[in-house]
Length: 578
Image 1 (cartoon, helix red, strand yellow):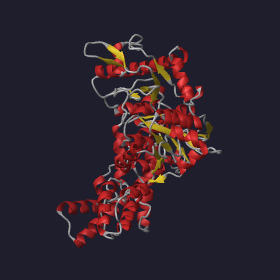
Image 2 (cartoon, helix red, strand yellow; image 1 turned 180 degrees about the vertical axis):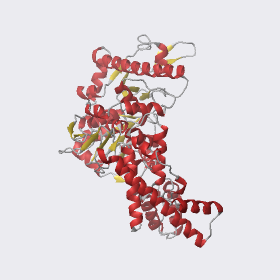
Image 3 (cartoon, one colour; image 1 turned 90 degrees about the vertical axis):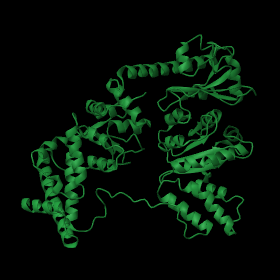
Image 4 (cartoon, helix red, strand yellow; image 1 turned 60 degrees about the vertical axis):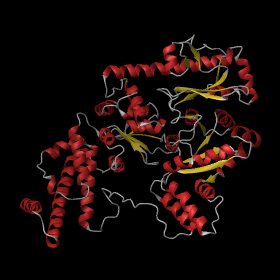
């Protein structure tokens, strides 16, 4: 759907929905004091460490550390993107999601997508019924049985059959919608015909279980063997993988995900007990594929057939892999024996042996250096220079971090170069609150005051009225944490409706997001009656320390370099109000 979701709508939605009601509908909560608790839905535990606060509209697990507002809960629970979570939260509240564009166009587009999803579901059911009850479908059933696919697995993946007719769909559903969904093809003479005919049909579902496209396989040696839906408003094959919905139904947080090449590989592996496999949809593995899967699992194993095409596909995947890797992500390469694919291999070797192959898959670093070193004589300077030339373009794509440094170190060792330096130094932004502050009481005291003031304001936005009652000259303050405090104040003043959940949402995907969540979940052990007093004390302490810090900085500069006219006036102003 085109158009951004208005920020005001998201804020109002977070105020409208009670996070306790939302989470309780998924995970039953029990009230204990001012909070509600349950066993965490994001990790296995016997003793409840998952806490929900109705006043803050915030959840936090003291076991696994996951925290956030209602949108964050849905994103983590159902592996949704931000927009998908907002749409689901709006559906929970029973309201429509507006878009920042022309109203008529937005409503029309929304209606188009809704009707297309309905059409895809109806088409899925149509193909399934053709498999189960039509005379033609019997040969498809027989084909699946010969491939070892049982009825339970066929039902799980909603496998169907497309009749050997030119207009089976065209005669059953509206032609305009079928064209938009890519299910029928419109010829130049105005005639239409079904895209899928006489094929086993594999519905492709998104993370939410909605059918977005289809794959079709012939049952003989005719070509093309596989046929996929074209690009549509619902289906973008470079962003989707087959079998992900079925995988996440069994394990929403899989320890690893195996990427294979075909639909039948995914289905056969799942039936055999390898229920963590997905397949790219007739296209090369992309960075979008990898980023999607890395958000769901820390380890990806890429499985390739052992033929020449499989080896070429493995090396082609290196560029998107290197662009996707971070320190908390791991990738392995699993090359199969010659003339074997996952479907045939697991039938031949069984689950235990296949699983051992997965666990023994080659580390990405070993595969990479083994490949770039092929046919190079590393005993000669020329060979080592060629190694650097081949490896450098890939290593430069790695995000900054420990893994990149280790790969560079290995290249130095392998090439014998001690002066190799292919990366630009990237400075790390200074944290708002450093864990390694100078051991001066003033610095420690100011950090405590800032944390206390920010945490209290974050958890109790009404305290903004206490700040507005004071005349604060922010220009006279120079202390760590003051910028975040000012930013928080400005956000609260700019919002029509406000609570902690809205504030957390404002800082999503910013450098302060982690700190904001930490402060929102921190227990300051302040009773409701004393919140205003403690906040006033923390704020006054912060303001005083900020002035002292500014004075110290200006006086030091005056001795070493001298002050310009503006700095002189600022120093006089602070000293006068001290």
